[in-house]
Length: 460
Image 1: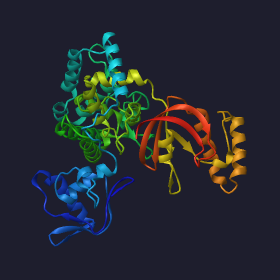
Image 2: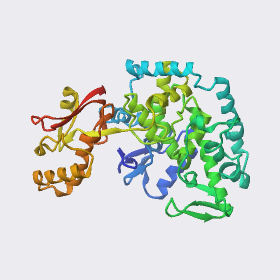
Image 3: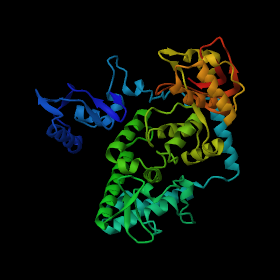
Image 4: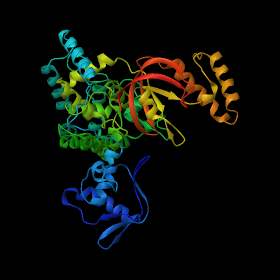
């Protein structure tokens, strides 16, 4: 079962003892470890879980239970046959158009406008840049280097020939890295290892990840080797990914990246490396926040789950749907949507009562706290907050611990949500609908969620 932090296999569950040859080395190692730790025991030719066990991912758990490589998002099912993917709302119906007609035409019109302006790099230049990067840092190159030479090639910022320099800083006629998505900002520890300019010593994250500590040359080399090996594993996974991969396939890719390449795939520089190696399979939005921002602006419910790879299939599919080359498609989205801006999560339940149907029927979002009456006077200043705080204290004297939080939420609802903002209606972790705000604050005393704003529901 999916839980926070991974996928839980319950005590009493059974797993195959025999493992298919293609998955033997990895799954056998997990079996042996679970046996040695007493997590599983042999039982009539199978393995029985003696205790609950948390796997990193659904696919990792499915592989061990089935004794073969497996897509856990499809293999795990409820008693009624519904897959984990369907239950967690990861998948979409690939027979149905991804984009509504307005969004489709908006993207196409902006693309044509940018095309006339000469805003896009030529196909020839793009391909030459991708090939240049592969020739310098592709899997075959990294696999052929070791020791201090590997460390320097991968992580020495002072070298203009290093991987990290090319990913973040190199912008010249030879290679313009900013064209392929930014990973700028933050400290050098975002690469998990760096060489101090002042002393030449290598440093990595200490007990607290944001506080660097000196490490030996040998320790630095081992980190570089681990990063190299994980990049190679990630490339192998992406090699095997179909160019027509589904949401479930990308969910499995995310699982496998988390399991086999966790130290690089979870970082922005790792995602940028993989996107440069596989520009037809991965977007160049290297932050999950940006990925979900663009999906919501396209009125798409992002796939359930965390990570930098799970959303990529939506961008690939959308670019094909509008007939725009993938690299130009993501650049067009940037031009349309602009800087990362506001979208809001709105809860739909109080206790066990859901108000989602009301919101759908009235084309609105709403919040409770009915006793305080009309608060259209609320503004985003200190005086207004103090006044609202006192009203809440009088109306709800038995809930003092909640007053500060509620005051903040109501202030945001009235004073900060703007027309054109995106709202996400949610029930816990489940996303029920996405809409665009089209009206100002209204108070309707005949509803339990009386504080409302008009919304155009674009996906539900």
